[in-house]
Amino acid sequence: MALTKLEKRNRIKVRIRSKISGSAESPRLSVYKSNKEIYAQLVDDKSGKTLVSASSREKDIASVKGTKTEISSLVGKKIAEKAIAAGIESVVFDRNGFVYHGRIKSLADGAREGGLKF
Image (cartoon, rainbow, N blue to C red):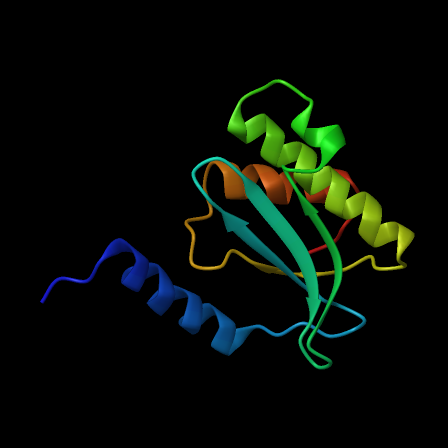
């Protein structure tokens, strides 16, 4: 029986999450993309809390015109800016089952430009 696209992504996601985990010193940078938007959050898995989040729906990013890839880069820079303000410098990247390509790669590169280490 053939797996749906979502089932395949969930299998990959479970495999990734079995290997990585975020802590207070080095939280997990979790990325989710829908057809229109992209979201990123820093998660401390030990306490189960989201420390910082950013998305393409925030007013300062949503007002910018550009391609989805360019917007993703802005979200990456924004999450890095918020993380550094919260005293977080290094993170563990969680692509959430998505291919490290296009918008996901753009967000990661933007976060690195913003000063996050991973």
